[in-house]
Amino acid sequence: MSEKIVGVIGGSGLYEMEGLEKIQSISLKTPFGDPSDSFVVGSLEGVKVAFLPRHGKGHRIQPSSLNFRANIYGMKKLGAQWIIGVSAVGSMKESIQPGDMVIPNQFIDQTKGRPNTFFSDGIVGHISFADPVCPVLSRILYEAGTKAGATVHKDGTYLCIEGPQFSTRAESRLFRTWGVDVIGMTNLPEAKLAREAEICYATIAFATDYDCWHEAAGDVSIGEVLRILAQSTKTAKSAIRHAIKNLPQERDCLCASALKYAMITGKKYIPEKTKKDLDPIIGKYIR
Image 1 (cartoon, rainbow, N blue to C red):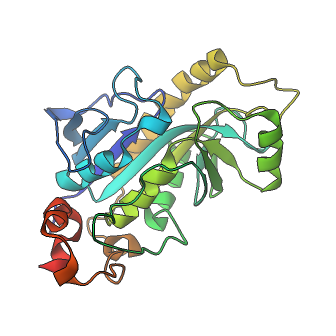
Image 2: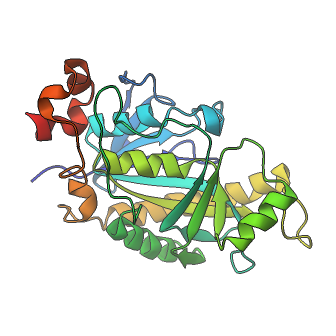
């Protein structure tokens, strides 16, 4: 039976995980460049956890400059079977108040040209992405958020924009007509790459503001965002503790075999360098 390894990617406000024991700091090189920072690997509640600050220590990498491929590749190389992506978002609905937790089950992509696939350089693959997050992990995160005392909204659509600027008022009003629930800048590339790497992925999204559509609430204030982030970070850490204790030892979801029928390129046509670079991801299918 394989060891259960959980990856945690911390977004704005979540730069470290207290309580990790037997800590190692691991710096990895990947074929796609350097990850956001060193991975902090340790034991939490008896479970092996690999933590990565998405924006780097000190929050020095803006959303458009994040090396998503290196981050997810690094998690795969470390053996992560699950990734919990924690993110600060804007609420697009009155019912989702600042400080609430959302566990999105759908995404809309409004980013512009971010590398978000491992399938290039002589190999083509098309994963199924109709349901972009792991249903098992999402359910566990919803239950964990409730236990942590958060107001949790199950399911919902996360609109991923390029940033780093917040929306214009016209954009915010337009996005509202699409029926989206929250708006952010980071989690969709992670979800795509995690599925390609056959890692279960789901998001804990904390609403920090009402974007700029809610005239009574005022426009987005970075000061208010940071205040709510500080509160939400404590809740996120508590939810993660609850969640990792309830993950199954073995996975039987579709995420675990997402590449089984996804690769189109014949084995003999895949360049040797690509085979070597992607070995942690595709190796078992081409050997």
